[in-house]
Image 1 (cartoon, each protein chain N blue to C red):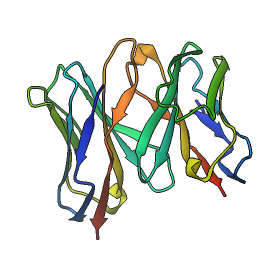
Image 2 (image 1 turned 90 degrees about the vertical axis):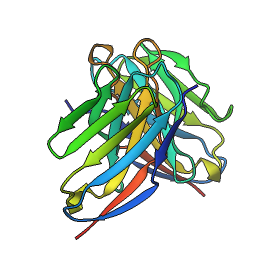
Image 3 (image 1 turned 30 degrees about the horizontal axis):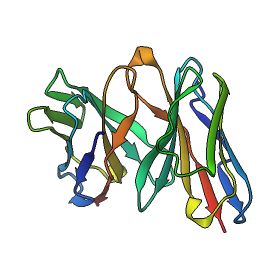
Image 4 (image 1 turned 135 degrees about the vertical axis):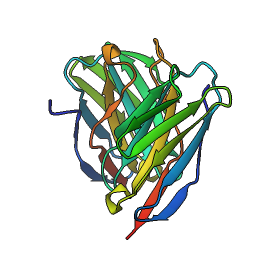
Length: 114
Length: 113
């Protein structure tokens, strides 16, 4: 299996621009997670889906952030408008109920907002 | 909700020595405790996990212990090697419908040659 696939791997954008991060979970996995990692705050869970349905979005920092999962093989995390404090590594991860809680991370999307 | 504290934040050891990283958790209902290793610029990867029905688990040079009464668990790495240098994260969570994990703040382990 190719693992969790994220794109873009790196993005530099100007403040105020819209940013869309994409994720393809491992085939067959029924949970999908979006995490944000910064030096100051560590690994933070932003939102997670079960069978394409958002379950808990309490970690989404504010209304500028939104996430969708239109089908089992694709999810997006959108930031509009972006701000410099959004600069971070955004990880998508997935897991499979039948295999317990093991979470598999993608390679991450490195976002820099200037 | 769950709160996970991890210590130390940085740890330097000589090659061949052992390293121990400790975590405490707050939610007595947590029953799954994984450890992830993150090399510089890479993704976190699971290295070992333990469930609440056992007190210790080993995999070659790494082992994890769990004390449910005290709500703490630890990662032990023996015979450390330079390639063990990385950031290590502990996490705690529950089985069932709420599949989110709460991560510790990470430990930067440096193995000195």
